Amino acid sequence: MRRDTVTKKRTISICILFVLTCVLLLCAGCSKEEDDSTKTKGGTGIYYTNRSYTKLIKKDKKIDVDMNSQLGAEELLDQMEKVEKSSKYKTAIPDNIVISNVTVSNNIAYVDFSIGYKKIEPNEDVICKAAIVYTLTQLKGVGYVEFTVSGRPIIDTDGKLIGALNRDSFLFGELPME
Image 1: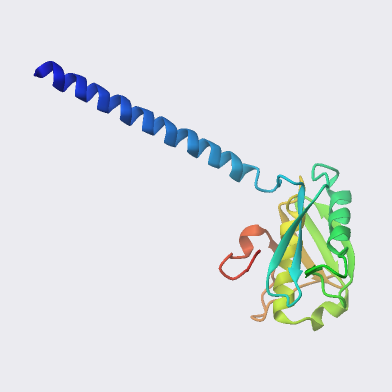
Image 2 (image 1 turned 90 degrees about the horizontal axis):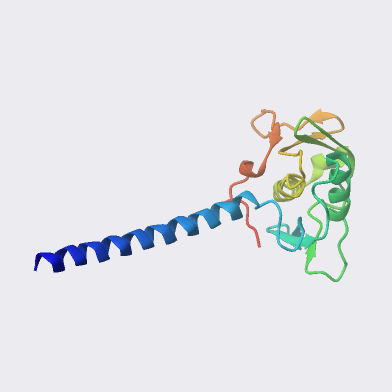
């Protein structure tokens, strides 16, 4: 009887060890996916919006995000503005907004809008900034995006500087994505 108990305990221990090993392997695979989250399977995610500026829509394009960060930022912003007229999505950068300049320095992409930026609706503002941040932070060497209007920092409704934004600056509960 004692031998049966030892055998059962050994079998249970082996099963528990097997289950723990499987859980650890699954967790290791999940963390690898999170580390590579900025690179999508189909290429680089370019973020657009739906027709009513209420959701971000990610479309994969074949763009090298490991290129020179300055050239990459210019290329990605250019791609964000290219949308077929028949598409169900549109550019997240409103029509009356012009990006005057983009420069990359010290892990920050500085995006300067034309003065027309001050006239956009609040939902367009959030979607526009989020789309640009999500698109540009895929580049190697860009972790943050800082926005200006005609060279001046953007100030929020409380009179505070917005400063540099990253993906964590936008909460998924408040930022609908498709």
